[in-house]
Image 1: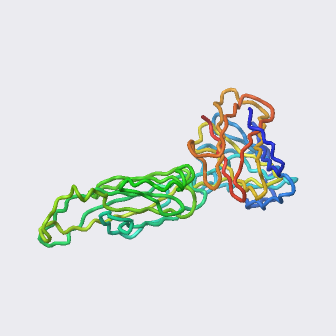
Image 2: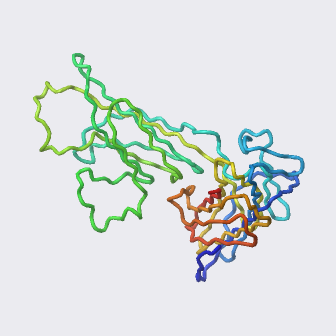
Image 3: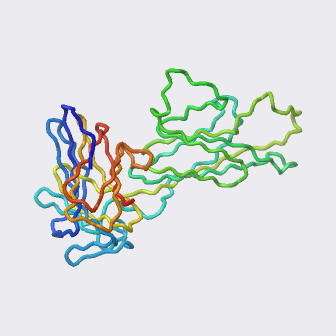
Length: 355
């Protein structure tokens, strides 16, 4: 497999991966997985990952075995076995990488917010969420409804609601379609703004985001802007007296990625019938210009489909949001390498999955 060459003179971080068909492990001297220490910028670092490619989802290690129905990290009777042998970190078959914590975890339910008709940014209601690290998917739920403030009129017509959601800061919006300044950052240089248009009809709308950036997320919501010149003039006191309210909540699906340490070798299992990618996490310190992911298939798998490689900084990669990707043929032998340009002093996530 070919990857881009790099002529940088600064340091390189090298991460290795080995695909094995059988994994043997000594289940003594168990240690918990710890975040890697930052690597000094004066030298390169080497970490290796050993994976068992399996086309039926099973693996063996001595007398131990597992099926895909086992919960590898959280509910399995046998916890992940991590052994340090001659500077190599080894994970027993069945622990894998990127274990799902088991469905969505409700995290935040916000108090109801009163929505106003948009005339300026001061009219928006601001919602704040916080997404934890190692989140595979964040699911936001919004329900707007009308509440009558008059004892004589109980029926309120639903309004059009607009909602914008963004990571890191408040969404910058222009409901009136005003042109942004020329020096304003382009969309490619900013976090994506996710938009929803719906009615205040008490129906729940959901917005699912894969690989969300961890940390603060902000949403602004309001009754949709309309051109004042097109609005009907009504006498005060005769129009319905209604209040538009918005309920919001967030749930997340998290994983437990396998952490790769510098100067270490890692073993695991990649099965063709697993529902989630094998996920790995590594820290790239400052002063690193290029990272080389080394991968060796020691025994080819002719019946397996291609393996796809994705890497992303700060958050789990998706099929449209990643630093680098590559296709790996599991029926070949020899060492492969994939180079990517990292973000300094940041955690990076690698996903391996069958196509």
